[in-house]
Amino acid sequence: MRSTSAWLVVSIISILIFALAPEPILEHQREERTVPDLPIPPSPPCPEGSECAQVRTCDPTSEFSPPILNQEWNVNGSFRIFSSPNLVDLNKDGILDIVSGMGVEEDDVGGVIALDGKNGSHLWQSNASGELFATAQFKDLNNDGHEDVVLGGRSHQLLAVDGITGETIWTFDEANNGTNNDSIKWFQFYTGQFIPDRNGDGIEDWLTSNGGDPYKLPGEPRSNGFMMIISGATGQILSYAPTPDNRETYMSPIVYQPHPEMDIEIIYGTGGETFNGSLWSTSIEAIESGDISNSIRLIEPKEGVEKGVMAPPVIVDITNDGILDIVAPTFDGRVVAIDGRNYSKIWTIEVRDHAFDGNSPDIESYASPAIGYFTDDAIPDVFVHFVIGAFPDYSSSTSLMIDGGTGDVLWKNDSTHSGFTSPLAADMNGDGRDEILMIRGGGQMFEAIGEFSFYHDIEILDSCTLSHELLIQRDQMSIGTPTLADIDGDGLLDLITTDTSGYSGASYSIIRWSLGVESPDSISWGSYLGTNNDGIF
Image (cartoon, rainbow, N blue to C red; front, side):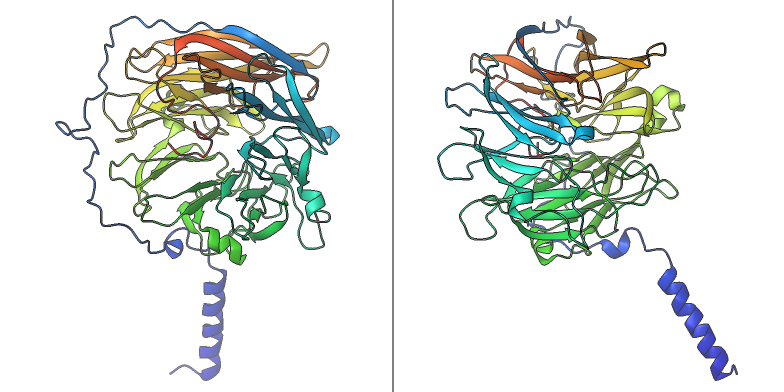
């Protein structure tokens, strides 16, 4: 029989071992969900002979005629543009106008610019004390009947701007009497979403993420990120909650309701280029409580890999059960499809297995997928773009077209170009299949003068014939995802792109292109976070 003292020592050691043991990655985070009584979907979701199979047939032997880009106008200015342009009719003339953030991180200057969609003339420009790199979102915040603009970026810049005058409605700094205190430091604000009014003032409020210290070196410890709810009317903080794994965050959150009978969920990511992280689901109420430690972990980090989840996922029903699912890229080189019914994995793709014949040890992604109809069935499909290399050195890229229902890779293309913009998808030739539009670029170092020369290609892939065509090549680099829409209602597609002279931000261009093709009744994936700028298909 062991002595009391020996038993005590063993007990203490056991407690310490348990306390110091690694946190289980997934199981302890799983929660019960209230799921409507819907039938379990078939597997695959469109089996042969089902109603959704073979509804988008096309002729793969037909000749593909790519659209021709014709420049309608080109607006140039100082600063750089990493922000993806967004569209809204600010001046009520029936033509969509263009709003984009801009600035230079190193100089702590920036702003937001609004251009008349008809001719590119300046509607207004509002200045900020740091670069605004997020995508603008729109809501009438002052009850004047016109859409206003909310936009965030570096150096804890977040502001609301009157859509008519360009005058500032509020800034985060002023609304909160400074930004930092002894215990909390605010960093970058990412693209947010409006949510139902939380403080009873009749104005929808703003849900966003904050995090990412740009002045930290790779591998240097970082502060945790936050999920935040901010008053849409005043910019005051209503609530905030630190990430459950104490990791930074760089991801624009997604707000969605999987089914009308299910609760609203918030999807967010943690980790970065040099620290692991996860994809999580939480609720508005949890953020309001200040505690999201019970967030459900949807994607766990790879063991021994210090890379997080940075690009926003897309929300789309790929199981044909009426419940929205989640398709997410990870910075460690995966594309993961998650069942919205029970959070189980539908399929997972290791992109490195397909890139350059599996000879790419490092492969990362800053770009959200595009969703469209690329096969002959009625299940939406997925198109992704990954860069090859390890932050901050990238040499090339690879693109994959994926069957949404099965996870099969249908097409891939390796390129010597890199690229950071998300692809777009729309049926541009009326054959019932979506074409994919993408921007890929590169640079050349001139050692004699110590400068980079940048360029980017605008390319298109026909999903029926799998014809891959170059539409145009331009100087400069392009970081912001373009926007595809019929801007003036003439029935023809337009494309808004941005480019900038380099990281130093000496100059930018905002360009409206006419594609000369009929606009479809609906555009599958027309901007950074989809056609409706909410990440939902």
